[in-house]
Image (cartoon, rainbow, N blue to C red; front, side, top):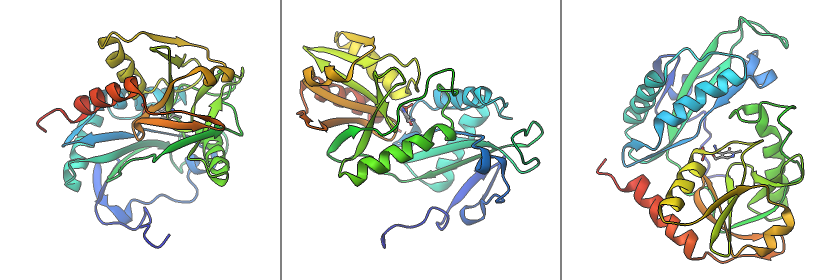
Length: 288
Ligand code: PMP
């Protein structure tokens, strides 16, 4: 752990409710509603060569996630886009990860917090590849049913079962966990969507109870543009054995080939390679 610089002890600036504060001073009180009751939504974005990929889509999703948690973020999409770009510029990064978040503050404690202030912050940092030689194992938790949680929000509370599932997978020597949904269908990993190549077609779970990732939507469009058939459907875990290629998609994960799911093994195949090239072009193929 010696080489890990804690996230609260770095140089730089964080955009905090409309102004830049020195990185180490971007603090909140322990009696913050979000910390106790998970009233927080966030985004994960990547900046490539000075330009945030799909910035507007992420800003819109942040606002939509807030609404799903019953609050209104006090900034427009355009204001969030401008604040994110300003944060990246202030940090002087060309390539980085961007983390906007919005949460209920300290004005009220208790389950109800109608009058708590909605705070917004944006931080960014340099972050390389999220996964290396990715092998998955079945998660210890399933994705919740849509009538048990706001499943389409990128909400902090939904990550409780993700952290637990990922820790359990890591304890077994795997890189991440493959979560099933509440019906037992294949859903996603703890932070990325999943795709299978079966006989030349791309199969991916219908996002009816988990995040319809922005990278997922990008990859589906890229595949269709290549003439690759894309089938969004319910996928049973038994079907993983008939896939020739498997990969996951996400802002942090980008496109990462999956080399194993428990006892099943996979090679990085031609369709994954094609989409990796297209994705690289889409994200880095601009002058900056
Ligand atoms: N599912 C989960 C649980 C995630 O955390 C993420 C990352 N935001 C994704 C899917 C992929 O979403 P995106 O491509 O928009 O980053």
